[in-house]
Image 1: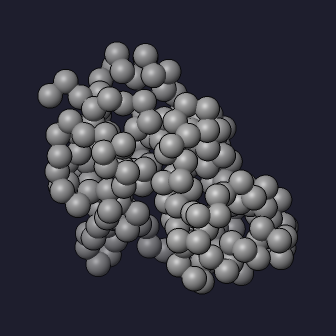
Image 2: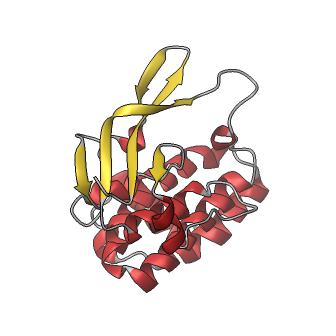
Length: 204
């Protein structure tokens, strides 16, 4: 098609079988060739690296790379790709199966006792915000809405079980990040999440 890259649906898989990845439901409702994030804002939820095939000249021209030394480095690269692409092919059938490990050995995204579970998540979000603010500010509301509904919902669920040190690290990163979120984005959040965000912004 000449599109800059292709992205496909992701399914989670565990002992029960395969099921759609919750964060991708809105982004992959249907297949569509030669679209982009402006025409299809739900693609802002498409943060993984492993469900994409890039045209090499686009990768180089867009200056794409993965942030080194942090977890959740997929997000900033995927956001930058969607924000830079003129045309994207979206395939609404599973092309990647993401295993949710049972038992002791869990994937990095499941290890909430690791401080990076909180700190690196927010750092990755801030990298995306900084890029969008400079290059595509009109996409910021869609990014913030997706980011808080997905990432912060996950972190709030894990926070009560985290160590006091990790709770403090979360607050140190989350308070300044959430302070910049526009009011019109916060107003549209589900009530329980909106209340948690309001408390966090106050340092509570």
